[in-house]
Amino acid sequence: MNNAYFKIHEPKNEPIFGYMPASKEKAALKAELKRQSETVVKIPLIIGGEEIYTENTVKITMPHDHHHVIAECSMAGEKELKMAIDAAMAAKKSWAVMPWEHRASIFMKCAELLAGPWRAKMNAATMLGQSKTAFQAEIDSACELTDFIRYNVYNAQELYKQQPNSVGAIWDRNEFRPLDGFVTALTPFNFTSIGGNLALAPAVMGNTVLWKPSTTAVLSNYYFMRLMMEAGLPAGVINFIPCRGVDISKYVIPHPDFGGFHFTGSTKVFSGVWTTVGQNIATYKSYPRIVGETGGKDFIFAHKSADVEALSAAIVRGAFEYQGQKCSAASRAYIPASIWEDVKTRVLAEAAKLKVGDVSDFTTFMGAVIDKASFDNIKSYIDYANESPDAEVLCGSYDDSKGWFVYPTVILAKKPDFKSMVEEIFGPVITIYVYDDDKLDETLELCDTTSAYALTGAIFAQDREAIIHMEAALNNAAGNFYINDKPTGAVVGQQPFGGARASGTNDKAGSVFNLIRWVNIKCTKENFVPSADINYPYMIEE
Ligand code: NAD
Image 1 (tube, rainbow, N blue to C red):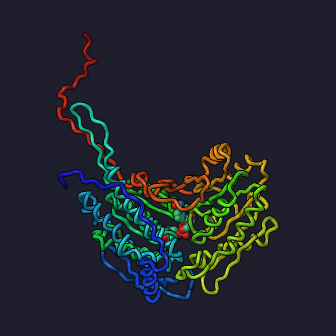
Image 2 (image 1 turned 30 degrees about the horizontal axis):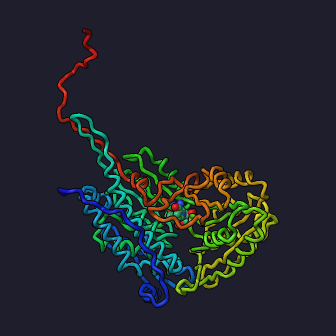
Image 3 (image 1 turned 45 degrees about the vertical axis):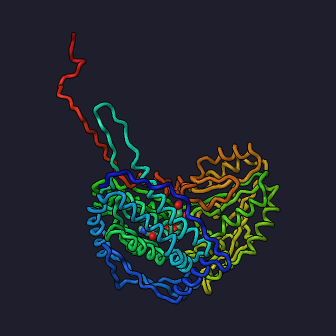
């Protein structure tokens, strides 16, 4: 305990380094890329602070050079998953009662290690393992993850300040206890920052965690685990357990001490886990908290008054950055006929200029998609569009001879419910539907109802009345809504992120709304002058 209120200052977003020619950061990153390219890292499980190597291993390759192995990862099975649950439950005894300022200090140190000495290492691992360009890695594994840590610590302090009223001789107070049991973080491949954040946000609030990273992001996620250990995270607070997803559903989710689930990934996996939770509801010691941010079919909707240059740039950047593998990536667009030819010319000209290739070459704009399964899935949509009378592929192709490369693809849909207007593809593919200028309302209705998702969406218009009208019509179509900007690139602390409908529980990662899910509030009433009366005054008749 301490004898003071310590103050954590409101954070500022971590500045994005420019990686300009001859800059120190560029030289450091290039040296680290070379070092990591020449190494094969043996990745263990980390359970209760101990490294565990198993016989069951998976080779990790670079998506843009799929013969090049950069790591070999041990996989947990039933035995190790049970060990991890035991380790988390054991560590909880001291972690849950550690004075808050010491828990906060550990995570504040994580942020400074990441923004400083670990920056190049984390960015290089994200570039090589997940095929991100230097800029895409910088905004993810360096800046967003640092922001998540700093904001979580600050927001925890703000949450702890929330206290009830007290009247007279009574003192009422709230205590923000961690949840009963342990929390499971099941994390996606596409953001190193999300992987780290899903594991650490519940831990900031005093919970202990099982962290199952995505196998295709395991190198950067492993380095982040090591970083947290270097910052002083006690053994067992976060247990790093790469494994098959199905084993989590089999051995972890049904456990009676399963207390919370922190997920980002596909809608299908999230729904499957929620079903398993429902089937086991009678065995749990408490109702598990379930937080999941899932898929999207994010839109750009243009009005005839739109600035065509800005709209075209938003389509290109929004759809193709990080190969369209952002949950927020623009993947369908509604363009009025009067501006379509102009938009089409610009988008196709810009898409043709984008360099696709090895991300270690700093002149590339796009790397490869994450793995063969993803490549095959995206390819199937492009093939389908090529063969369909209801669509025209305006540009786009693929090549998997060296890496899982899919080139920027634009599909023109002749009907608004064409397959690629409706389903999440998770690749560099945008489908465009051209509408008659005088059918604005019908097309807004289509945009709102065509897909099951409601994650991000953008409208483009110069006419203010049109903006008001379109925003109202699409009020429930997105959890993150943009006016005259691309629908990607949410910044922690500025645009709290998450969507509704089939896009998740919308608990806004990095904000206080997310942290609330990881605490179990105890309210204490203390009476300084308790009454000795049994009868109430109303019982006296005269
Ligand atoms: P995914 O659902 O395939 O995998 C997520 C995690 O679940 C991985 O760790 C994976 O190994 C595990 N998993 C896979 N099958 C499982 C099973 N049967 N049981 C239990 N666990 C299982 O998602 P992904 O491909 O890693 O990520 C892409 C998806 O994530 C897209 O749908 C994207 O929209 C979504 N996403 C959403 C947000 C958001 O904030 N809404 C952010 C990033 C990504």
